[in-house]
Image 1 (cartoon, rainbow, N blue to C red):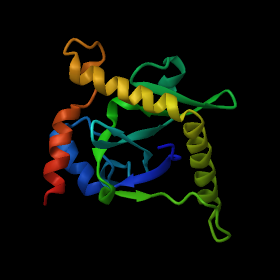
Image 2: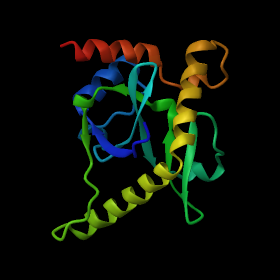
Image 3: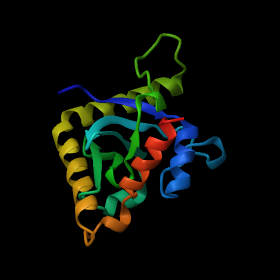
Length: 172
């Protein structure tokens, strides 16, 4: 299965539900001022679950960070433009996802065009590094669930607990 990645919005109600299970789940709501943060639609399969890996805006601290098992910088033209936070990936079902349309339209406003071009660049980068991203997510997940002494464990969301929450939410 070698499909290209897409970008998705994750349903706010679902995100709030997961946030109640593990308060380190990135909250996406107007109240938190983060309603425009999409989750990178690297909808990968890990142990029978679909996982969505969040894309974060570039932050000053990224300059001093190196890529690790739980984080990768997206660098385009020698400039850090975003980050991929594997430690914050969440289990999802397709009904919680809405694909982000990054196709440019004649009627798009200037700021929308700029935003879509930025997302397209980041998505292109992710598709070029697809195998590395999938491998990294799987290695992190497997280390988390199999090694209680895994050094980066405390930085990760509780994947099994979130999977149980995903199952419960989707049985409604």
